[in-house]
Image 1 (cartoon, one colour):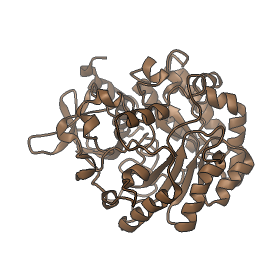
Image 2: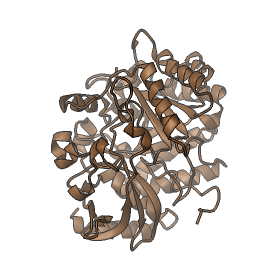
Image 3: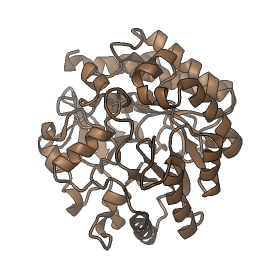
Length: 441
């Protein structure tokens, strides 16, 4: 597609799907295809006034660090906020995924004011996150808070990737869209600090700093996550490994944050351990609904657990956490990835909606991340353009409709729903749901 037609494509989809907020159309396009940064829009890393991209688990970039040019040396902002412009956009928080070849570009005008440009036209103003006070302080070891406990979603979520690699390793086990292991390797190769297994005491020390300097209490939740553990790490199985961080956090800071854990779909007794440690929300991600695609794209998960057992464990965990607090993620768009995916948007939406109906009929509300085709992954290599924008827009429509069919409301732990209010930055599902209350003026 020539870049000149991107504006026409976006406007056509806004017209065809008027019930999807126009903000979400731009947000999905930026998440699926990335955005380029003019040098005037890059941060001064940890010494500047802007909160830089922390690479909290995956790269979420359309190039490797050496391919990003100056954006590899001066990090872009963690997120951007879109407002105003000719489409009169309400405040929209978008996770930054760098793509030097994107038709979207963030640049400063002659007055130094940042804007988002598409096909050469300024389409919105761009806000960048201010450097939080807690990022300016280091741990006793000299490590930065950004390295140990970065925050995303405009400061709402503390993202604790306590295990930076995954034990599903190599072509026969790694999920085919996931670059967690490559991201670890590229940061090490670039000489960047990137701690493999985070020390519990260092995590507590970083949280202490956040708690002390986050006087506005903007940070509301933390997520404990990392790669899958098929054997042990530091002598602990997966439930015990992630659980012992939760236990330490809840003992030191009882009730300060909503505790969430992203782990595999584990047996009931393991899930109970998370709950006993004070975790409030469990994310046993099912990745992709279709049976064949799950086998092809998640070979490690298929081999060690299996799709049917994975789904059974998700439903079982609702008995322990309550259905509302079980929120499995899927990677929206991989359904259409060549060579195995659906070839039409209709088929892909039908399949994904079947999965949504399965879980929502049990009161479980999945959420999704918009697929970023990272170039070091098999699916990213084969599908550099990702899924069509129309798929992402129709998914938002199907998702909201399915929630309404089952009388469900937006899941807890994601901040406020509604266009102009949402802070969840890696898909537009929260932007597309009805606001709980009127948008503040």
